[in-house]
Image (cartoon, rainbow, N blue to C red; front, side, top):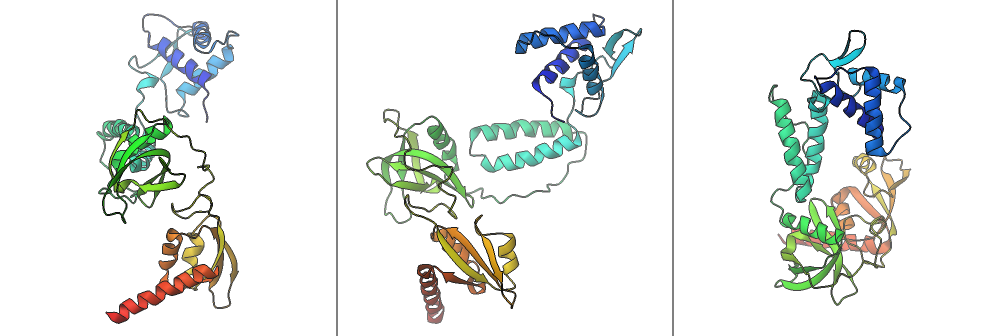
Length: 339
């Protein structure tokens, strides 16, 4: 069940009181202490009821929050912890807690190029080691796709902070097509990941064009302290990629309706793992093949998705994409015939 901030303040206050072994605590004393704490931390001066504190004690005693606090009443009047060393702040992680945290850390570690994720991973790893020290180590049950040797991940943190703090970058970069690396001023706007590769979107000084640069092609990078930052007035990062598969899109490029037919054997794969969120099943043919439709920008990432199905898919429209696919298949056939 959700716990609000006021309740947490009361739990912590009751815990602090009951840990004080040199004073006897009546219910009225605990009510006064909780009222004082709520006034100090939240500015609430109306006080709290006797029933509220009684319910708090009941909640702390229960398993609902994982406390199982050993709160007892003695002399029919005073409250204390039966175990004098107990505190809700020292409650160990349960097996369920550990499982959830371990899985969350595995997700976060996919972004270990960011410094704060790395630090969190270290913290949770220490917690994990502490909790698992008394039990047998379990084997992993989740394995994420990752590429440990991917270049450029060390630049993630610098680029992220530059975007957040609106700082300009000086970058030495070499594209796959360039003969040598070039150095230029770059205004970063957005980081985007696609299939384990990271890209930064922004503008090079002196040009109006939106560029996407692969981090694994960066040779060096630093903050250009004296260079004023140029604000992003070109695109909305929240909507710009809605009609895109991958990362390739020009500023004025619009999505097109793409129709394709998938044979009976492979149609279930496309049906259960759509190429794009806009994908719709138009109809199922008599032979079991399925006709699909998506509305996307036609780029190289889309083309590669389609090539992945080779002889099991047939693009029907638009005509420009049909002709492109036919040309590529013809060139591929010639290559195999020549060999």
